Image 1: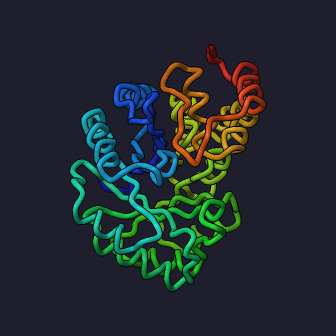
Image 2: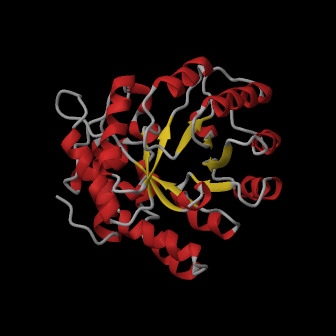
Length: 299
């Protein structure tokens, strides 16, 4: 199976559970992975930004990957390796044990505000250093507005080791343009759960999902229906999330989804500073959205 097929469907952007000492809760992490695989997700996304990668150490990143490899049961693993220090990313690609990793997800560099040429050279260096295919991650809302512009996506798509993009700008016109200027086998993956169905309708291959941490079965069914061309059924499933989803990001990701996961008794709501747990106002609204719209039991 080629990488294009391996990354079709639902990839779950796994959170990193923490215990009361702010250490990785490995038992909860294993349970989370089991739940997601039991809910028919197609592949695991480890150490993405939803995993609080800016605040985990290199040793912790390796631990998350090692556990995921043990639990994956043959499912693909996409590993998040990105940042705003190109040399550091390249070094990690060369020194980390990436056994079992099928692809790398690399976020557009943040804070530095590089030019588009700088972004191109950054990804070129990563692609040349990576032992596995690379997926770009465009998320202007979390990179100081420094998104990957269309002409840069088109250039990068021509590099042999760059195979797709996680597009999280929520701009469907931009997504259409990406589809227009890239090869047919270049992966277009939704990075925004609420536009995943629309993204598939214009030629996308699936979604890298936050919601799938808590609702893997429902979300995977939705994506599969869309990939089959049953957009009416997929949209009916999508509407179940329409009240809850925006609340998940109101106080930054993964604050919201971790609260939901705690209600489902999967893992703690704990996050690492500078993030803090959801406020009382937000938790009340999330509980209401879960109880009214989703067939789940909450504590």
